[in-house]
Image (cartoon, rainbow, N blue to C red; front, side):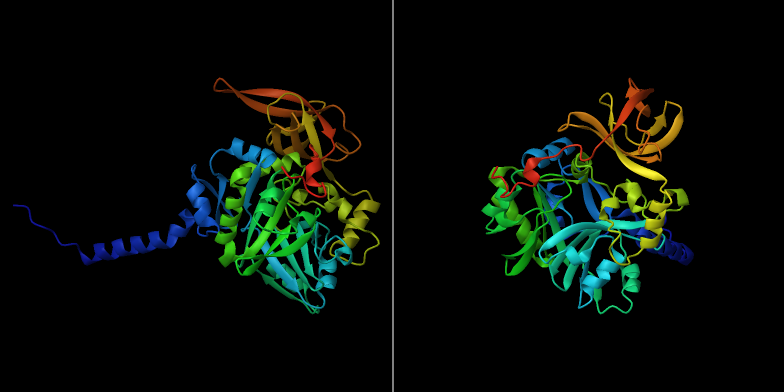
Length: 419
């Protein structure tokens, strides 16, 4: 008759240790954080197609990436931007401090307005780009892709200013598309029709306040909404109820990324490498090398990187240029090498797609000057297309074209159209 065997104490200790190690490592296998909107997004995530955005569980696509893209362009799309890093910057010296650390002239940014800006290290290389919201004369919100709190705090030395990260405390939504204005109006946000592009205002919501700005990352009519985290679900439900008859749909990042490319907008650590992340020096970029030179006012007082940026301009030391390309054919040139006269490598495509709106094969590419700057002819891209389970190398002609690739009048119409 078989007898039960008792586990040796050493076996029990090994099992306990293995279980403890497995529990300790579980955070490597699980995206740890959920945004305040996560219960609603999880319920809609039919594809279970998630990625990590700054440690948060975020969707590449919720139901169908193609239809999600067309929701932006023909209806209204709701996208959770809560993982975006947000800083509250306030105090008597807030304006002077931000004017010192960012490229654009903050003294020209009036309360109730937003501007797109960037900030650099001392050598003039871009640390990040983002949006700066002026909520009052002494209170700002800075939104960015990366986290910069230690650098911001160090830069605040001798300024009477308080800098705090509020990413977890403030939930954010992007409502983009032709019916976005009508949805906000039908949701009861009276006066939202008065917002012009880059305006912001505060509205009552569920016993609290929601900040609504006429901003976005799609090149379309659209808004961004910021609300205390504990009011997030009630805001989601309010918008969904108001937008039911106007085609509101929740979307993931893939659709948003296509829309931003059509709008010619860049993404940090996708279209350029931020200076804190660059390992090789040839990956560093100055504002003029990624299309952000328009932000720089030589007559503005000192700001981070000013001397290096102006010296690079004066001595013609700028090495790269970011350009829009139109490529023959209809196969996207994702991560393709760009050649001059089919033989000399001169750059790399960072984002590409066949644009349903522009009806063109478009791309963003970083090229080595003078290519893309003074030499714009005889450029080619190398595309590998899958044909019957085998890759085929295609050399397609490319030409430099202006950005944005599409320009929609409804984005800037005042008052916004009632679709």
